[in-house]
Length: 417
Image (tube, rainbow, N blue to C red):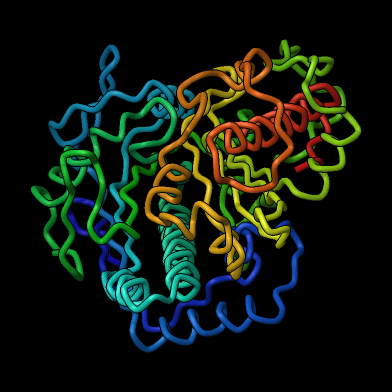
């Protein structure tokens, strides 16, 4: 790391990378505190052991030479960006500069995962793909810790990072951000990086981010959403001033009243006792630093021949202030599940069935409340062979998520997550 006349710039690869077990397990979709065992543990260890000698994770960071907010535009070294959420954060913290960051797990794991898929080894593919995601999260955390160490010596503080694709920052600006980095960098990236017009990066296990920089460190303690430590998972950091969660309010501090975005007494198609049980046993919710939520639901059903099967439903939701809009949805067989291949439609045409499951993303773009008025055929089939059965399962998943978040809002119990 060096602080040159034009500002901070650093780049490098990491020989050893200690991805935290709990973070990897979380990304795999298991509940908090879950202990891997059996085949899952074997695959997790394999992915970690393969990546250690073969992966080439790297990081890059450079402080912008110019930074200005004017109207609804953020200007960084002459390039204009539009993100209301990031702009509000920077203004509230009195940011005077920003740091452009890129971190990547490298192309090696992505290429190996693709080879495993081509070889008919979907489990190895999945676990290595997810380990790549865990590497990126870890890189972002330790890079943020390094920046905090540098800023501490300058009497400054680093804000939580923000990236294209986060709420209120269009992913379409990702090519613009990468172009800015490449145009102004004095040190090259440790390995090639490119971006498609859609905003997708290659290698895909890569993150571009902007970290705000402020001299008004006193403001961060008054604005809980801006306390960097509460949004940073790097446990051993010597500069940590707060635990990795929202700190309790001080005695006497007034809590602003907020109207809940979801109705805790909503009418569901499913019995609330069942929703409560599923929320506790099958659902994992994670609040992101930007206020959005990631939800993972484990569905357990059966094939047409009464063989048990399991699917993972992943849903990304926007913030409560936005009404929890459904931003992303996916449904895939759970790690290690092979019985989905025994469904009659899978045997008849596996490509058609799995393609339909992958494409169907009901209610995407709508607020979570839309599930309450979504009419669908009430069916009880545990398989995925027809659309009515698939819609029925998506309804169960979204109603469970709605119930869990509505109860959280109603009780304001931050330990629920």
